[in-house]
Length: 75
Image (tube, rainbow, N blue to C red; front, top):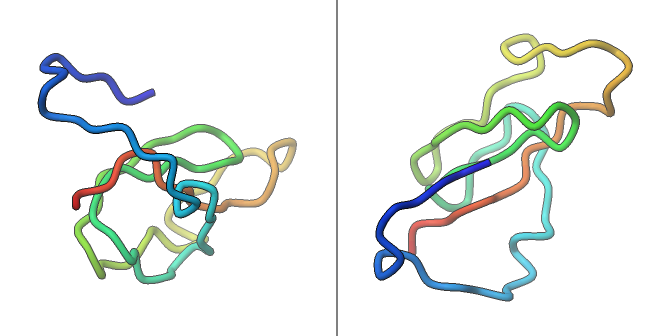
C-alpha cells in the first residue's frame, strides 16, 4: 500500500482510469505507482515506460494472472 506524509501533495480523483488494468509488458500510459492485482506488489514507473513483463514478475499460481492497476498517477 502506498503511503504519504504530506497531504497537500496529493489530490483525490474518482477517474475511471484507476479501474483500468494493463497487461505485463504494456506501455504505462501515466507515470505513477502501479499494483499487481494478483499479489499486491507495487512498482513506480515513468510515463510510457514498459510495465514489468510476465517473466520479470512471477508469483505463485494460486494468485490471479499478473495485471497492473494504477494506484497513484502523476498529472
